[in-house]
Image (cartoon, rainbow, N blue to C red; front, side, top):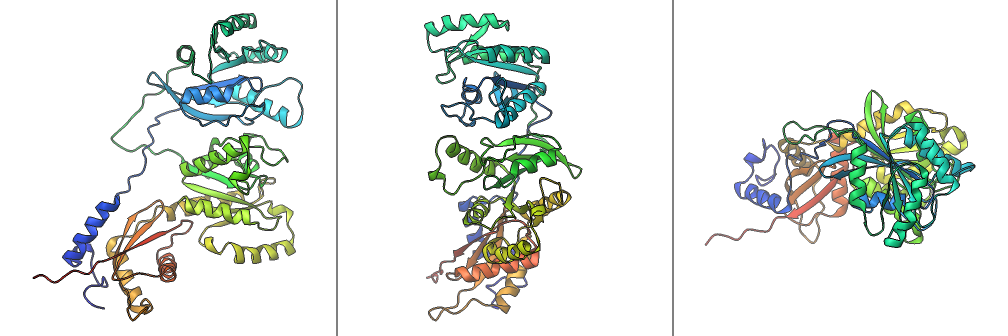
Length: 486
């Protein structure tokens, strides 16, 4: 190799000075962060919890969005959109607290509705205070009065919210809610924001103080974030309930039960993890409507916030295009990836044979992802989930020193040069890892590097350095020829 290439270099300090200066200029232009510090978690303790309860369609999720200041909870103008208890963080007047949005509570219901109501009751029990929401345009109903008894029985402090009060006439209707015996009804319009400040002041008066925030100094690491994604009805909620060892989210044979991403702190394998159960991703987002459409968007947002995506696939069914599209979505988001084949207890030897053939044919793009065969129903092989996640995260965070990377590239280029195209043979001159989470590499070359050769470089990088469970990004910068000095 010529002395332009990197083979044998001890590090970038021994590069051609002009090459190194150009590399540094491009790195600054591209905004590479060599330290890749990551995000600090300012939490220093558990936040006080406010449970928002009420009948279906009284505007609980709209009120959540108003309090947290963004459209996070799924909202639709029909009852029963929220089904699980979903947590959000809010801040008012410098104080932080956690909100638990619950599904609508109803009397004498069965099946899915009864499970939703049970989740609301658990939300009350696990809270520090309760925000009781009533539709002021309807007034107090028998279900409201029954829910009042349940809230009183819990012994939690209560704030009464009269929602959908848009004017003075609505305030007169809200005055009738004194009859519930919960004190003053705070008149609010979640849709327009009317009265929300007074309501929040009353809420803070009922909540215990939050721990102080700590910034700067030593980084405070939070739990690793794991998103459970997959088609509807592949068992994401069942898996979350199994690892949580409780019925944390509603599980039903009806596909699409989950709509809001559900966060849950779970002790597993001696560590605390934040698992995020998401709504099933349907065939095409534009083919969904209403709550399902917004649920798909929330799932994509939850994936962006996660560090590792556990893609659940129903092993008892033939792999679908939808499964490969979801895996591609996880890879393109830059998350670490684990593929979990659920319902393993339901398949026989013949199905296992055909599944292996389907994996070889359809999932070739993620051969690097750890694979686990589990059963959310029976708990089979759940102990293998944490090691697979840890392996994927380790690969996701891997950094290769510049000297070692360039020594590897020099040997690779010498042994397997790029094919000659148009009478020219482009060469990789040097490279650097521009970042991690996921690993990102920039290669500087004397000419255009074909996609096939880039894939070859990626494959050899994985063989040499591991990178199990993580996508790899490789970009190429073609070095412009320098003119002769006059």
